[in-house]
Image (cartoon, rainbow, N blue to C red; front, side, top):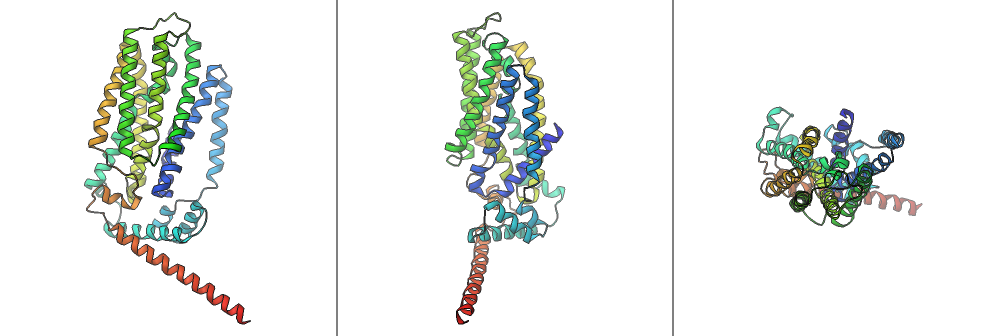
Length: 385
């Protein structure tokens, strides 16, 4: 578990640093959430059939591929540039973008200018810098965002899916396990739809508020159905009320994977400046595992002791999260990592992004003219010969 948390922290930091604003939407954490959902699907089916060896095998093979794949990944261009390795940073950016171009050169110049501005604004990373109002606020957001992600109730549904489905009337153990298998498919298809059709078309706050409102509504329906039509523990198959409750659980899972599942991790990584991104993402990841553990301990006792009121509890949490998203979170969609200082009103470390971009553009144009002049000169010499 510790190694998994470390891997996710490092991986997320790399994705945020490597992807430009418009690319983070499509190729960043939404795709990561899709792979995570797919990874959870096959164990649900193998466990349903009692094939624990196959379940373990499906975990070992991808882990080995990840380990081998890391040997082929270049370091983040921003990380390299911050350490003075500008040549390696440019090579890394060209590798990530799939080739050199004027746009890549302009982006690289903007990265260098942004890092220089950050260094000039605050020399040396200290705890005092973390206590700056804007940075303190961002760390608060990272921690509370992960708390809200767990309070949506989806993690509890995923961890205790067979017990959850049995509690809403899915029938006997075998039936609830079968329903759990389809639960994994619903999550994967939802993230796939989000990645293809939704990401980049709506803002972060819209996704957070809409997802929480939908999950709260579905949790409320589940609570009402289970309270008015208590499941029969001895039933072999699901009753009509049980089928309705199962459908609402599927809808809740789909809502989560269309919003809080992929967007929460995307949001945490893009709100921090380059100087404290590693610390910020690590704070969010550590909080996620802490609150994840908390909910994993609370959920089985809640199901056993308060029954349908567990879903009512999650309903209340989700509706409260809607107001949290509106009042606390800031819209970050469409902004580059260098622009986040302005988004969060960081007076101490903010810099003129437009001026930085203009200098980067002029540097890129000058470099392009130098290359073009060299080509013309070389062509003239070859013609004279």
